[in-house]
Length: 238
Image (tube, rainbow, N blue to C red):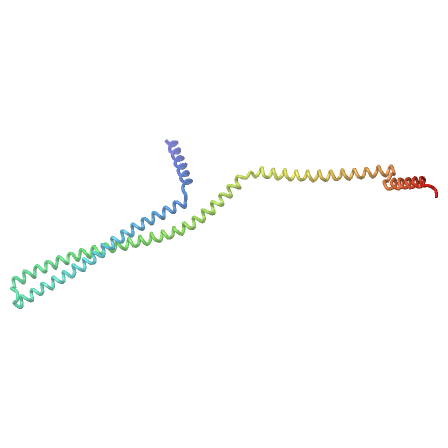
């Protein structure tokens, strides 16, 4: 059982690793911002609806409150007319009682509307807080996205460069440079060797000429003298 659990954990780890490799932080952030904007739209819609209900409840409260006051005024007017003899007392009492009943009903409706208004206004305050928080989060993550894009751009460039550097076979490069250095040393030594051989050949020729004592200039002078003597011999006598 423990072995199976460990295998399962290893499988989970590899799955998460594969997912992490596939996930693009920029795309995930952009998707998160889109989700928050959708939530913001929904929250704004809900806020508008709840505000409308709060306004309607406030208007209902004002309407029912005015009706209650109006029924009270009508009841007082009926009683005053009864005192003046304009209306029979029994009839005035009956109508005044009905007006007071209507007044109570209006007051009950006004009380209910007031409670609803307070409830809706409380919900409005909560929704406004949520909207404000969502707007702040969206603004924050849009700024974070700009920074993230720059960081990813730099990290990708750095990763590319490091990858290129990592792919270079440093040992083979060093070996190649050592071989080039050795080759240059060999070429320099060979050039110096040929120079020494040339110097040795010149010195040997000089030694041979010196031993034979046959300088080139002396031979040329002797040949010129012999040619002049021959020409003088063949010249006719005057």
